Image 1 (cartoon, rainbow, N blue to C red):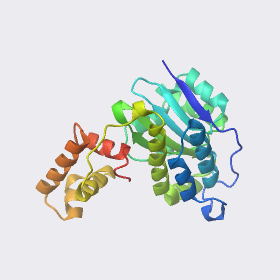
Image 2: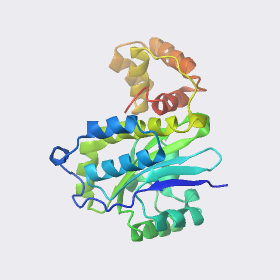
Image 3: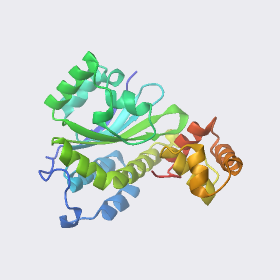
Length: 261
């Protein structure tokens, strides 16, 4: 059973495009994030995503949550026509952004996903026709109880402009994704993660380096410790996070905002 619980902005997108000089706007990113932290309703979240979309001058921003049972909810700026069609056609099963990001922990440019299949190419063509854009960037966020969220931005522009935009704003978009996920969790107590013991500074460094793709040997060398000491940090963090393995520990640390990459 798919739950249709979406809040969509009806305002027109900014015309400024990727690479917007944020300092020229009348509001700052810090102001928007401050309001996001104090959001008390889905309407508040809708207003924040609209502000963020206009702040960065992109075509669309979407926060999309998928539960382990396949229920979908979110807020964003896509058209109602596209959202209704997406749900009606069951595109959750073929959307390369969902499929590809579910297998990743790191932000991903949509061009790096697998669009080679016939169904994926047809989906992409239809998405572009509905104004989604030919470029996109998504930040996966892991939640409690097998739930999964994505924070995505999309735009119509050439590859060079998009590469410049994502390079300049990558860290901010990761931060925003976790801010947005935290705000959404607070509005739905059933999705709140279990309390977590605080990680030590060394455990945070370890989890962060693993999250960005370092091998254990590289992490040990970077932190100037032995691999035996590294294993102690990893196992301690895994225990505190209630994780089954190292990959699970990294996912939980990211989903709970304990590390940001």
